[in-house]
Length: 360
Image 1 (cartoon, rainbow, N blue to C red):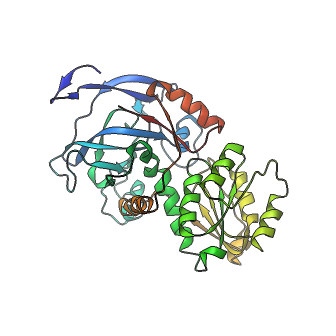
Image 2 (tube, rainbow, N blue to C red):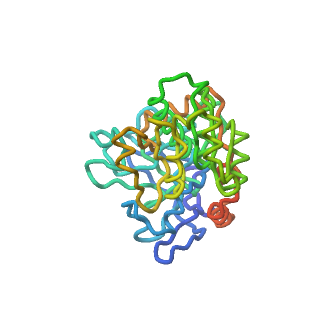
Image 3 (cartoon, rainbow, N blue to C red):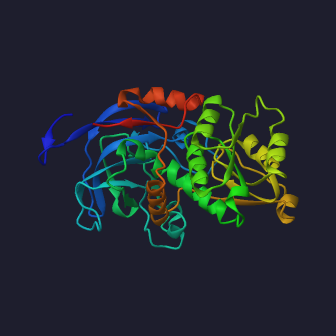
């Protein structure tokens, strides 16, 4: 760090930044941000890597504009403590623990923002870590209306994934369960993709009392699925008859399946895991469009729904539920200088749970 101002607050910091010009990542020295009246300056304790961060390096057919302009700091899930609050901030004070959602330049109040701030009627929404500075830096500025309190007895070192993977998994689970009125102990839900997001979906389903089938191509992810509470786990590469096995275990197939992958083939095969009137929850976002049979939909062979990381009120429920049920992500920690190593591990799929950076 170079330079000091406002007591112990530095003027500069190091950050893992993406350069859109050559799609490279470098550790750069940048200023500690100033805050606007509606912002909070946060001392980041932990920031974690999400698979969607890799979208910066891949062709994108999801309708998102990513990586324009100059270098910006990566990362859209983190947690930390309040260092300073703007004049218009309500409900937060210095020293408190908090986590937050990453959408900025939205109004928070329009009809669209009640569903997801990315679609604010202003049409100016941006994702921190995707188009503007994110959280793989020691200090960051966030919008106070994106933030929620973290209970004092929750460990910040492992909380960061709750603020993307966690709330996305929790919302996918609760949205799925709203379609399943039966007894949880006799209701089967498949989780397709058991890594950073999927292992949390399994933990939430387990807390609600549901029976769980884990599906993944990675032996490490399947081991994580079992340790997180899955009743059975299958690898389509090595368990060639896994769909038949799932149908035998569940009777007629799963009542629902939550797909958190970015794989079109994985979505296509997920339909075969479902029984009549089963729910397919679309949570992961492939780079290419999905297709479903009109006959399957019109005849209610399957029901297709979507879920996402949601809004601040839903995030608050996720944090409360995680606290009440002692649900924590599995996080492997790295140093900021090892950021590119994290990216390579994420690309390879040879990791368990989530990966992140701890700041002093």
